[in-house]
Image (tube, rainbow, N blue to C red; front, side, top):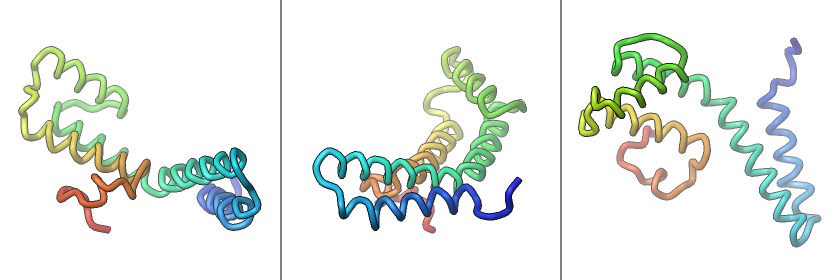
Length: 126
């Protein structure tokens, strides 16, 4: 395993090259695709920065909510099964809190400048 540069540093360097050097030289469709590539790399960078912590927090909430252990995927499947079977009511406050926190973590990675997220009273201040 290489110590330097990290995956995050590589993704950031490529994104900065696209945004600062390539995009100003591009026009039309190519410029649009470069912007899409830059946005995709920004999402990857945020995933690398925040993804592990978000997944750990989600797994912890799921374990507390449904009272079993497993992988994140297994716990989510079990939650879905319990919702479908009405073992967990849709108006359960613990379920609502879990879903809100999970959604906020996902939006923070995917679209942190989304206005509905940016001004949400539930958003964690960074």
